[in-house]
Each structure stands twice: as structure tokens, then as C-alpha cells.
Length: 389
Ligand code: FAD
Ligand code: UDP
Image (cartoon, rainbow, N blue to C red):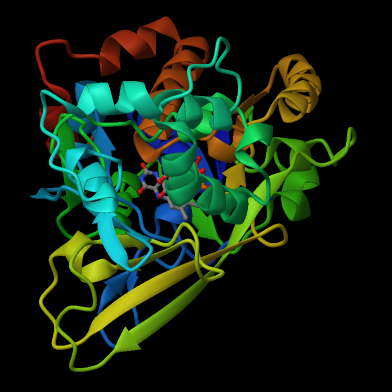
């Protein structure tokens, strides 16, 4: 097969790069060692017919119009705003912490006028915000930190919040209103027919050849491509020569409940303090599917297993820098994605990074004449997609 670019990994990062490069006229071989496309965002009906996410719940949200517009070429959407409750004591209260959370935990009647004074009373200002502990203690003080964050974080990461970079806990805001949505992004929608169908449309192009169940390291010596885009783990590419970049993994325990329309009132319930799992997600909330039964997943974090979460902390950044220096010397290989860049990216950030990467590669590889022929400024991206090339 004639191939210009080999893309390793058919998740968001690899699939977006493959699609963009094919549209720019390059022949792409996309491989994944797993038996399916979609990476960790892969979804599939379970044996009871409930659409579920084998690698954990994936909720799409973004503030980037470019990302939403790009993906909208390949899917229709279903509006969905995610809600999460946390079990604290015997109560189930909204997380991120908002006015109602505080009122219910402490039996108060605070309002939008008085909540900030409450936070000001309990918070312990920290001169420097370096760790995830700093973020939370600085915002809401010791008690809310212990009730909502310390236990969850220790379970999720196997580390105390004081050992994790601030960016981890900073994903969860503290609210001074009643907003009980988990995300406040401008675009919050789920692919109407699921992620896998969306990936299928993205990769349905005559210049993209997809092979699943193929490990890059098994074929590396035979590869004859002008360029490689690698979205697997960065350290694996270099044979772990400086040691392993630490990842957190998860064991997913899936369960189907027959003749149960609803298992829980919201998409996800977090368990910061009790149980070995961190959260339970019920997929029908996310997908809107009608079914006489329901399927849920419990997440048990663990150190061994598939690499799911890069662990943001200073010593890992130092190791990452050493691998980045090696990566910079590989002129014919580009590393992108959550694993390829060792970044705690959400799906939309992967798409953003992949769009940028693909543009750089295409600009370098596609001859100017071909470029002129393929870029038609008067035609929108959507029209181009419909036209098929
Ligand atoms: P991946 O999806 O990991 O894809 C990389 C692919 O490379 C994999 O399919 C892998 O099999 C393949 N690969 C690796 N090595 C090789 C090799 N040697 N040869 C061939 N193939 C190889 N983001 C959100 O925006 N919202 C959410 O709600 C959300 N929930 C999440 C929940 C969980 C439990 C997890 C783990 C992540 C969640 N994410 C969420 C993050 C999201 O999964 C990632 O941002 C995104 O899927 C990463 O895409 P990627 O293509 O970079 O990596
Ligand atoms: N977190 C927490 N308690 C919660 C929710 C989140 O302590 O109830 C912390 C925890 O460290 C978690 C991080 O905030 O890993 C980010 O949460 P998010 O829900 O964004 O994690 P993800 O969906 O990526 O697993």
C-alpha cells in the first residue's frame, strides 16, 4: 500500500490527524493495537443492548467553537449537561461545591449575597498555590477539603493532594451560585449515535486505511512512511530508556440491572470517602437511550493496567522533559495526544492539539501546487466533508 503517513493510535488524537491529512491529499495508514477505533472514547452496546463506554464515562464539553464545528461534520448531537452528586455522610450533595452543597452539609440558609463571606470565613489563604491541596484549602478550608477532596484524590491517584500539581484539583471550581452542572462550557453535547459512529464517519475516506489489532512495535521495522504520528505513550516509544512515566490506571466494573429504568438520579455519583471505587456512572443519563434495564460502571483506580491518566506532579514533569528532548530530535515522528504528550487532556483538548499538529505536518509535506488544488476558500469545511474530499 502507498502510504505517506503512519498514524499510531485510533483515538481522538490519531483519528483527527488521519482525517485532516487525508483531506489534504496524503495517504494515511492508521493502526491501533486494540481491536477497535475510538481509543478510550470508544463506545459500544453491552450484551443487554445498552450503549456504554468500556473505558469509563466520556462526556463531551468544550469552549472551543473550532473543535465543536470540526466534530459536527461527523455527528449530530444530543444536548446533555452532566450533573454529579457526592456522597458525604448520608447525604448526596452537588459537586462542584455550590451554595446548596454548603447549605445542606452545614444546615445553613446562605444565599448568593452571603456565600462568599462564608468561604472567606472558612478558607485558609495560601501565599503560593503549588499543589492540589493548596487549591482547595485556599478556596474552601480544611473541612470541605476533607469531606470532598482528600479521600477522593488519594483513591484516584494513590497520592495525597499535597503531592499533586495544582492543575488537578483546579479542574473543579468552587461556586458562589446554585449552578449544579459539572461543566459550564458553552458547548455541552453528546454525539447523537455515540462516539464510535462519529469516529467511523471521520475515518471513512478513500485515503485512510485503518488496521486494528496491530501493535506499532511489532511492525516498526517494516514501516515505510515519510512521517509517523505517534499517539501511544511517549516513554514506550523510546523503550522507557529513562524509566517509566507514571500513569494511573482504572479497573472498570460494569453491571447491568434488568428491569430498572433508573439506578441513580444523575449521571455520576462520587464517593469521596467510602468504598474502594471513586464514582458510579449510569450511561442512560449520558446517552438518553430508552431501555427497560440500565447499565452502570464503578471505577476502581489502580497503579497497574492500561495507562489512562498522566500524573501531573513536578518530578514527572522533569522526566517528561527528558523524553521531550528525545522527541524533539525525531524529525520524522510527531508525538501528540494524552499519552503522546503526557498531558491530562480532555477530549476537546486532544482534538485541538491534533488539528494544530495535522496542519503543521500537512504544511510541511503537501507540495504548494497540491495545496492550491485542495484548498477552496469559498467552500466551508462542512461542505467539503459532504463533498467527500
Ligand atoms: P487514547 O484514546 O488513549 O488513544 C490512544 C490509542 O493509541 C489507544 O487506542 C491505544 O490502543 C493506541 N496505542 C497505544 N500504543 C500503541 C501501539 N504501540 N500500537 C498501536 N496502537 C497503540 N475527556 C473528556 O473530555 N470528557 C470526559 O468525560 C472524559 N472522561 C474520561 C474518563 C476516563 C476514565 C478516562 C481515562 C479519560 C477520560 N477523558 C475524558 C479523557 C479522554 O479519554 C482523552 O482525552 C482522549 O480519549 C484521549 O485521546 P487520545 O487519542 O490522545 O488517546
Ligand atoms: N476531585 C475530588 N473530588 C471530587 C471530584 C474531583 O477530589 O468529588 C478531584 C480529584 O483529584 C480528581 C480531580 O479533582 O481526580 C479532577 O476531577 P475530574 O472529575 O475532572 O476527573 P476525571 O473526570 O478526569 O477523572
